[in-house]
Image 1 (spheres, rainbow, N blue to C red):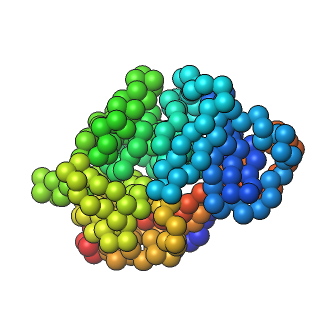
Image 2 (spheres, rainbow, N blue to C red):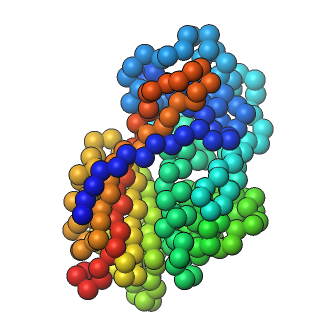
Amino acid sequence: MIHNHDLLSQPFPGYQLLDSGNAAKLERIGEHVVQRPTPQAIWQPACEEHYWQQASSICERGRDGGGSWQHRHGVPGELWAQWSGPHATCHFRLGFTGFGHCGMFPEQAPVWAWLQERVQGLAAPRIANLFAYTGCGSIALAAAGAQVFHVDSAKGILQWCQDNIAANPEMTGSVRCVHEDARAFLRFARKRGFRYHGIVMDPPAWGHGKGKERWTIESDLQELLRLAADVLEPDGFIHLSCHTPGIQEAALVNCLRNCGSWGSIAHGEFTLAHSPDQGEDPRVLPAGIYACADGWQASAG
């Protein structure tokens, strides 16, 4: 069964989408108001220009895809977000990085909630989180009792994840940080016979692994998904996020279907709701796509 279901992320402590338009978004991150580029916002802002002037940090996108920050009042200090899921509350350290990132992708909040629900009832759930970034998804899973293998090829990002682990001492599960290329991790797991109840992945458009392995989503995603399916427990799941321009939901679904037989596949768009601070706002900001295949039938693989 395949069905469409868009995911809407609401504001939570530490993150609010205040306004959007003219290829930009105005956000409150921690207690800091920032302006960042977002090409999807082709409409006009809802608020007047003076409202946007409250931004104390502005990110400008470079030609190479990176981002440079202009801080009007100096670099902000420590920033935190608090997200409450269906089974646990989590704390995430935030900060401003190149590529215009802040250490968290708030559109993923509905995924964190789904993951917490999904691992309930499983005996000692084992989850692999690939391209796992600073660990928000991993922390959400571990807070709900899962044993998480947090895989990323960037050492600095893994240290950030360690900071988030330390900020959540009440987790009932665990997070093990693994400095490795995602494909190499899955090949090793297959060789050793390791199995996971679920695999979460948010692959970039391009990049390099720990050993300088070249990655492009167009040429390498299908192999990655097949490797992931090879190490799933029966009835397991793969949750795939994508932010690469030009790739559509149907493409993700097709790649997952090529991996074997599933009980269900859901797909849709990530969207962000605007804060009601300025009154009710029916607009939503597109923020990527996803496809989630569940109910892996190992005998058909």
